[in-house]
Length: 350
Ligand SMILES: [Zn+2]
Image (cartoon, rainbow, N blue to C red; front, side, top):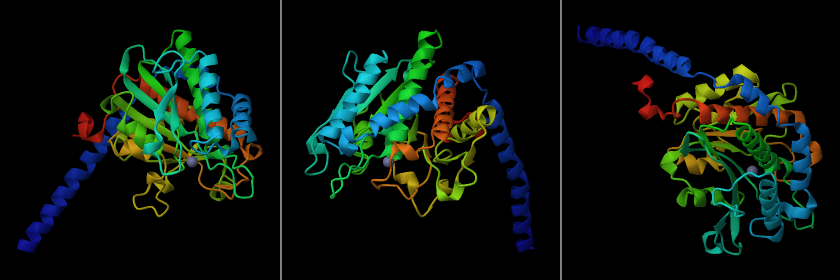
């Protein structure tokens, strides 16, 4: 009798709770309304494989000597970014010509010299205090023992040039009267290769309060195809989408299905996944502060962390399409009516 009673109680709970949860999820999905479709397409189309390629051949050239944190080549790479934003009339959050967040040597590892994050900013027109952060790391591995240069075209030249093109697209939109509701910060992080130090520093000394940071979309390698996708190359791995905000997960899916139909591969998003990619790039520093994140990643390939990671091996058509996806996702988050909600605050999930 007792056993029977407990069993029926389980059955009762089971039948009640399951549909309720799915109704909540459906309500959440239905609540996401794509903002300004025509404008998204118009400004996404200013992101071109041609410009990405021009920037990437320069950024991963031997001039920058593998961009090792604190070294002259990395300083030149930072200066290249600063000069780009200045010449494009894209502002800095610090004003004038100062685009650097200085990181003292004492904060970095022994033997590493001081370095800098590089920041560009498109201020929001309605809710400027709320900030969408798009990030990629600017540093890489430097010069190999045999004197060869680690070019880091995919890692993370691809993410770096994606930020340059997205900043230009948001800035052009703003000049033409379509500035984002919320602010967008383009954050080029240093010292990722020595333990994500640039993002840890930024989250310790944020330029905008972390409680006003709506999301971090982090890009680390989006220009190549891995072995799993040789015959299905129109893909990208997304990691972290549903950890803090289911709204972010469904918003990202809806933007993709509305505009792009890229195969979004979540295999590395599984909890306890053995590669632990979720904790291996800069978004993780933001996730630790309860900020929703998406990590965009093409997976590893034979040239990962090798001198053979060169710009001639980048698939520029894919780099363009993936950059457009991230741009459109950022546009939606920056422009939709409500601020992206954490699950714990989301009324639709209560
Ligand atoms: Zn990287």
